[in-house]
Image 1 (tube, helix red, strand yellow):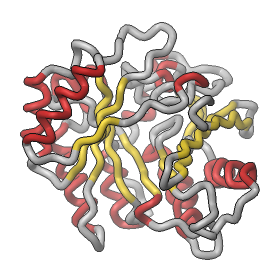
Image 2: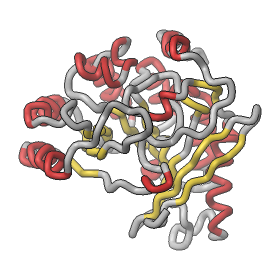
Image 3: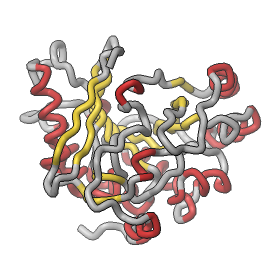
Image 4: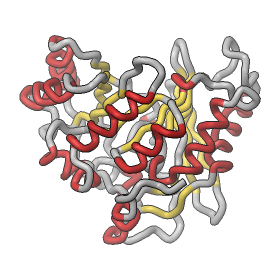
Length: 298
């Protein structure tokens, strides 16, 4: 990409392809890693969800994305002053908590002193809100947590993020509080909020979000929507996004606007699609979502 963003298309077992994206910034280099081929959650504004779900990645296929990215730079893995990949975010294709054990195993390697030696603050798992698995996550890791919120009310979130119909905001927030309470420090959850023109970007919705955010230790990341072919949504205007942010800031919240990176190579947030073999039918995308009502057995 012209802004320095890099995207890798990697073939995995079975012939499907997944994408990983490297985003360079002044003080860090962030690698966005995929956890599944496709996604079953069918969030209405995400291109990955529109292709259906194909398979979970193994821990080796997940950590392999980190290995290939690091190797491509030819820089040291551990030297924090020189290494290119300083942060890893589980925000690529798929819902990480629906591939629980391989994701946890891969993140453990990212943190391991004898492997990638990343700080727990520099590895982030992003979830749409698979509550039973989030409760389990608190028992096995303490990486940073991001939650794809995208709406301040259940009525709207039901439409944008269908898993909310199973685990509404109040239930999700209880699970997030539990996770934060298990951390040894006072870290916050990051709420991701994609700005959709005329859908979730009004001043009233900003005030609703502000009220909701006051109930939990958090920061809010406003994400300009990245259009993809066939979508019904449009990105909010720059002025609308910053007006929305201003309401949050004036209420005392930490609220940032994500700089769009890699959109010229379809590597921006919500644009990762890869290639899915034997694409699942739309009606079957919810099968995996329905199967997560009980906590994992260990």
